[in-house]
Length: 182
Image 1 (tube, helix red, strand yellow):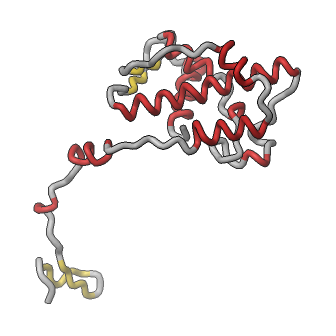
Image 2: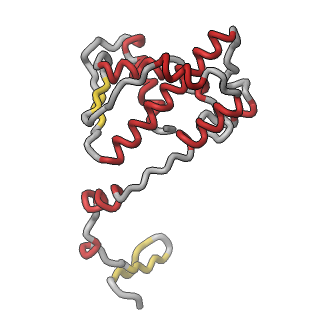
């Protein structure tokens, strides 16, 4: 989440900063199992943000500021809350699923969550219960992956082309260079 959220936030602001519509497209490769799992975590976080903000609206309360809420630690820390996500995050993810933003996910995005059902299931949650769900479903969500091992070959440099070089330097000048020590 810590890496993806800023991307979505920045992209949603491009047009407000004068970038012409259609001049930029973020394409997220969603073809791997791991990417789909991450996408589902992002969707869950967006749904939680929307439901928590709706709970605030219904109760006529204000969410605490990310800057003010000292118990939140960091936005993605163990004491954070869904309302600490950037403003509009939930809408950006919703619009991405609907295909009305400049973000494309190439995998199966799955169903759009039902805001009313998601809120109704959580309407009576306390702050601690929100934190508990946030922590378990977002922060410590584990995705079992061998992706990095599989993709390592794409970037692997053949070490046979490299050897150790030993240099003797005297007063800033190399006086001996060899592939074996003296």
